[in-house]
Amino acid sequence: MVGMMELIDFLLEAKKATYAGEGPELSPSRPSSHDLEFTRGNLQYIDTYLGSEKFTGAEAIWEKDKPLWAMNYAGRVTAEGFSGDFLKEALLHVPADRPFRGPEQYSDGHFTYTCTVNGDFGWFNGVEEIRAGGMKVYECMFHGGWIKE
Image: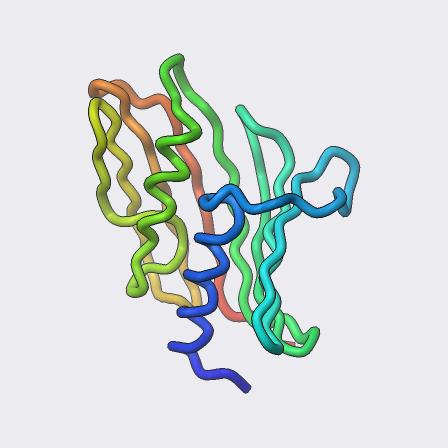
């Protein structure tokens, strides 16, 4: 079985190559779903989400078709002025010590992204927000951890 640091490195690479990196979508696995996949060796990452302005999704990692780790998320745009490009930019800065969504804080122009996490890679929950000029325009909750059969 792959070690935790190797798994985190793979997860960071996968996140940057799929949604945040505007990677290509697969054929939908469910009606109207958006599906993104990244593989390296025996590891496979799939991110599937529904919606856009209000959305929900799940991402998971498998090793040789055995599920290892997963995260669920749900979010919404809360006001005018949201930028999906800024969200993707923030998510490209996902840190190795918190490999869930984006960094604790990231700013560019009048946009500020914040992410608060409770727990660790094995069991966690968190929330991210984007503010435009001080007004909250986006929020997303997420949770997940190890999968054990």
